[in-house]
Image 1 (tube, rainbow, N blue to C red):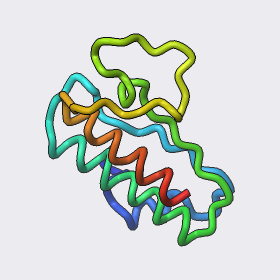
Image 2 (cartoon, rainbow, N blue to C red):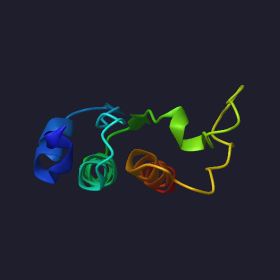
Image 3 (spheres, one colour):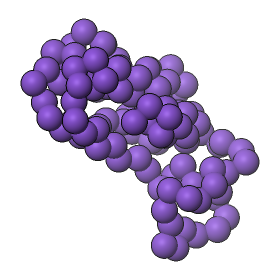
Image 4 (cartoon, helix red, strand yellow):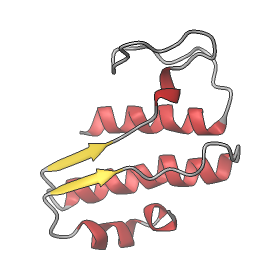
Length: 107
């Protein structure tokens, strides 16, 4: 995962790719702001920047159902139209909401 927080290495990794699958994330049970921000937020920015700069045709990003789970209501037939919860209870959740917004705004 350290690779995803380094833009030069990300560009080298994506060089020549037509499709990039972005599925990296630290263990959600580790509630550490620096870790989740570095990998999920900065790392995703590096992935997006590399894909744009290198003209990668497709970026396929997988997130987590946690970004729309409010801790009370179950998720049934959930999709991207579900709202984010009003409160973020973990750094994992906060960072995933941030990176989801990055992906939607840039791709």
